[in-house]
Length: 281
Ligand code: PAF
Image (cartoon, rainbow, N blue to C red; front, side, top):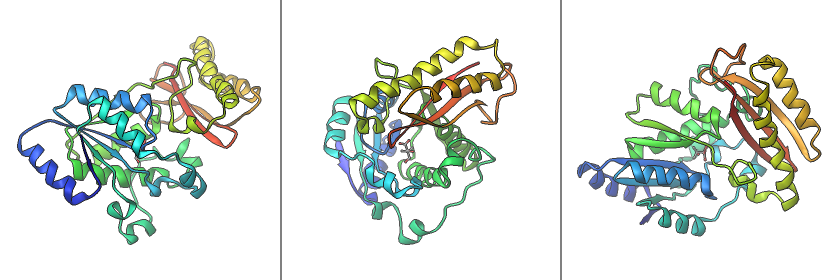
């Protein structure tokens, strides 16, 4: 497995790979890898001749400096996990390698078609601009045939699909299911920051989400939304940021169960922000 830190070297290696007509799979990550990421990498390794994984904590998608500073980083451990999962190349650039000063200071613009006006977009202004900024850059460099993203970041995935279409990237976006701990807690790099006690409390999030499906279709989406909110309010140690039941394509609030819907939640457990989601219909 190769570890590459510069664009120059990445482009030289990938030029050869593309010239030999190997299929290239790509998994963009911010490191602090867990079983959820590894499932994406293994899928990429199965589907493609050559797998590239990027490890880059992208500063432009953090709207909160403290969150960026606290984001877990452990490249050595990540490299060991990637080596064991069959990855061919790890791209781990510096901030300066990816962005010019101008790019770091200028607001990146993208037409989200309203997908950024709800949920994460409301609570993390500018977050998705940063995501599109870095993923579009990485797609241009890696030129993958397939790119793998987890459904845990449901809204991000919808936005990546839109970006791919709008910017005409010749890449298939592969949606990969959420990987959960045995307790049901959705795998996340942020889980590393939970104390054992907080981890037990956070399990309540997936429990409530799983239970809420029992009320479909008896409750309306609005009534179910209130039910979930009340359940989360009752769990000491969790602070709800939002829970929305939305159409899986438009991300607009669901009006009935006749459309494909997903319930998306963001919750604070202490100062750790966790997200999760569940398909409802
Ligand atoms: O999902 C993530 O880890 C990040 O948002 C991504 C897609 C790697 C872009 O920085």
